[in-house]
Length: 139
Image 1 (tube, rainbow, N blue to C red):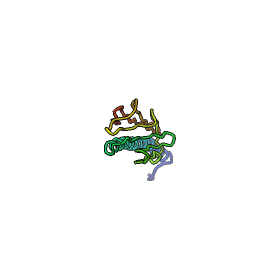
Image 2 (image 1 turned 30 degrees about the vertical axis):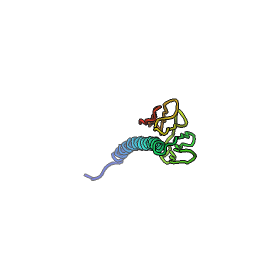
Image 3 (image 1 turned 90 degrees about the vertical axis):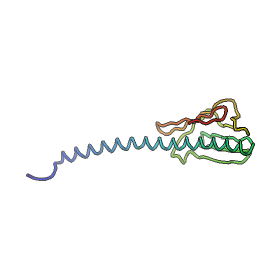
Image 4 (image 1 turned 90 degrees about the horizontal axis):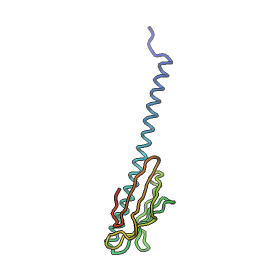
């Protein structure tokens, strides 16, 4: 009796390990996409909250501008930029919005005609941030 394994047994083990590794990597990519999209949607919702708080605190109209082509979200009052978010830092998260901006009045209410919907997407994972006419943010 000899100890050891045959070439066929080793090839079977390598193919099983390779299959399990492929399944793990594929689900890991989905988790990374979901984490990046969730972080981006949280940051976008935080910028809307910042704009609303700034409008109430300063008594001036504050706006959030969504630049889908550049993947940027800007918060500004008058001519001053208060905050800026580049979605490229969230590893290729794409932004789509139903409007290009949202403004808050001094009362903290939204200034505009319709709801705003921001869709953030990477791979097959997407998340939506909705801003109502009154300025409330829902993720």
